[in-house]
Length: 48
Image (cartoon, rainbow, N blue to C red; front, side):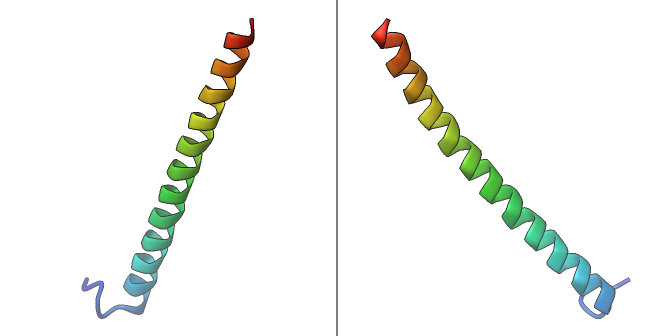
């Protein structure tokens, strides 16, 4: 099975690329939110 010549193979590769991009966006977003929450918790802890 040659993925470059099969239409279903090309579709599978496209879906894999889309899934990879979405996963990367989720990881970047979660990291940014985690960093912001860490700063928020540090500010709350410093207030007490």
